[in-house]
Length: 265
Image 1 (cartoon, rainbow, N blue to C red):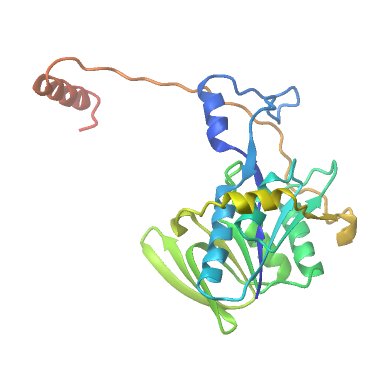
Image 2: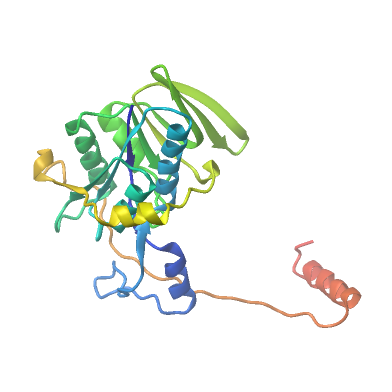
């Protein structure tokens, strides 16, 4: 079974939050990009959980060939991380200076999957931590003509079908569809594993397969963005904390009084 995981390189969310809280996160003159060059980049955490879902299938005895593909990355550290976790192949699709929106990214990923022999299962994180849109997987499914199941916490493919446990506000939902299919993985899957030091050292020596837009035979119309980023801004971070002095009983009474005054209770 060939499983393709689509993995996005993102800014480390913890580092971005730290810069923001310290008032050191700034947008450049273009109004779109951060000026900080020291913010680490890593694999989107939801995509890492998609890899973990595949590794659990392998642990359960399924014969799985895992390919991890990324589009327009600044470096390949996240792909080397995928190799250290157990990916059979990692692929970087280079886009040069072309600006792609999520429609274009989905088309590029779908074109790669088709050109590389297809996939029995395509897994993606439920969303990316940088833009939180979560639309690329659905568009991949549309381009490939595959059914899509979202927000999965467990994936079990067998006999040409895949059974998925979805996370919903009303509890778990079990659904099934025929393969091939696209499934998005949520954090309810559980914590992803850490690679061994030996695996990390081995992965450092490996290089991803590089694919260009020309290799995918995509014309200008296919790569024309439908959505344009106009501007980003850093919201002002405000904090308001009031300390209540006194012993426990007095502090509790004062807290209740303030909550009633603010109509909270």
